[in-house]
Amino acid sequence: MAGVLGQHRDGLDSAGDATAAAGRTVHAQEVMRLTQVHQETGMTLLEGPVLDEDGDLLVVDVTAPGGEPKVMRVDVEEKTSEEFHTDGRGAYTSAQFSPYDGRLYLTDYAHGEIVSLAPDGGDPRTFFSRKVAGARMNPDDIAFDEEGNLYVSDSRGLTEGKARGRVVRIDRDGRKATVLADELAATNGISLDEDHRGLWISELTQNRVSYLLLDREGGVASRHTALRYDGGVAQTDSIAVDADGNLYQGLHGRPAMAVFDRYGERLATVEVPADAAEGLESATNAAITPGGTTAYMTVSGPSGGYLYTFEALGEGIRQSNGG
Image 1 (spheres, rainbow, N blue to C red):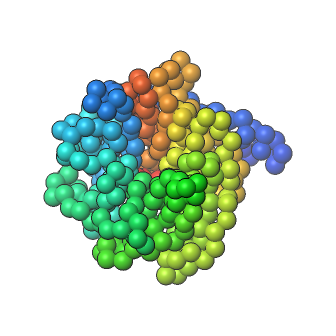
Image 2: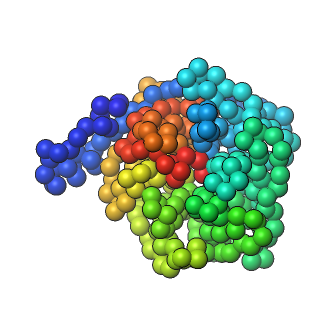
């Protein structure tokens, strides 16, 4: 696995390089099963992997019923997990630590809220719950800029045939919320690029990734479609970005991730081995160890919720650790 992904391409000319990259498959390796299908909700769906300062991995289970772990802490070395947070209400779809206050922020898709926890999982607070431009959000993923302001994918669906998804910027104190982009088709993944110059966003029901160039005030200077993913039944889910600017595009409908460079060239596909893929239907997101290349991928389906690992193409940064 690591050898395949880490091969140097110095000896290839540009044409050969592109051909080799397009056909590269990386087989992720199972770390452990974290969850089984919940009887109350009929499914399990892992998301939001993020490493804390101690190197433990935090993972959310979107469909966990009240009283069962909604956020888990995983010791990847010992292959053990424990409850980090639960409540009777939230349907959490992402997690990321703020660079401003160090708290863990969770998006509650079902209730249109963003909540935060202390680094030890205690002191739950509602950070944001208001309507934005007259409409309640369905917050899916989040990204923080260097000052701690939030960029949120508002994954609203269709209304009378019109796409209602948005990208929303929320100031770090939670007082001001601004719509940066709208008329998007179920906005899902969102990540700042490696230089904090722009946002990559994915639309679940269009299999499209767009790039929003930001201005100095955090607004949008320009917006364009960056790439389209021809995934058949698979759809574009969450996004992580490594130090080299590569995009790790999670997939809903297939236990795999598509990896692109910043110019849209397909570099690799990270897959669950075929003999383990039965009963697994999504690989929603990945976290890459900050300053390293060990990556962890959340994979789910009727067989349960699993954690897989692979060797990333570039080193991990904040943009590849949660969200």
